[in-house]
Length: 400
Image (tube, one colour):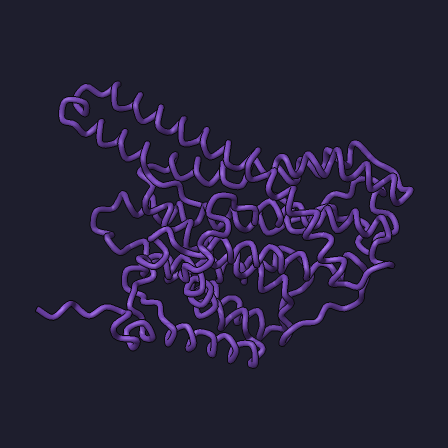
């Protein structure tokens, strides 16, 4: 009997897409963590021009390396967060997963900046350290409000640096990341209550994606985006919703060399038009996820995902390097390399000492809560429903 045809037997299947996006990314052998590490490094390299005072940063059709890195983060988050919401039994389970994923590490990083990095910066720059400023910075970081306000200065601890006020610039993106978490939760869990809305979440996400990209296009036609951080919510929402839309269609959309090449050409064409933030979100998100589906780099970050820690510690490290006048002795890429080497151990410590323990505590608490709910309901226990709930909550693979 003839053996069934596989992707290896027929190269055309691999080119056109032998696997769906859901199968490719759900197998556990994907490179999403490796991609996030690349994006975090790209953000640090991009910031080196500004923080080191090296002059204008090079860009491709107006898009800087750091902008591309943040867009990549949001594309991956859009996909993973939507999958997480769909797999969560309750809103509490989803909210706990999201909160413990970003908040404990953010809190430790904010405390480190406010009470360790800022005093060191004041010593290096011969500036002043202000406790009230440190508390204001800490409050803004913990409230996830830096995306809608100027980062509170901590005295004159950055006096003499090219950026004299902002101790952790990338935290502004977490405001919009958190907003996207809330939007996805509202769509998935509200529509789950409507029995007739089997595809309601996918439709709502598509409409939101279309509205956000349309708003970005209109903004570009009106003259583009200004320096106010609140204006950047539209492009970030568009790219997040693109990843979210692909998540809702993950069992239909296929990945392969052919579709990926078309997506790359679409992104390049969007760049050439000058409307990349309006035209590129969907092909860019597909391209990122398609590359992430390649399993060759699956070992990177599979045990220790340090990308988030590198992202939130990179800027403060670069500010300290600038305060020590490192930029006067090394070229821009040397400055970036030093920042990356210093950020790596902090990212690792954040992963093993904060992020992973927080996830373990969350899983233990949710399993205990599930057991309590099951044992407090005699009818569920008698029918076996309670034990199924306990097993599901205790054994589900954690979402990142």
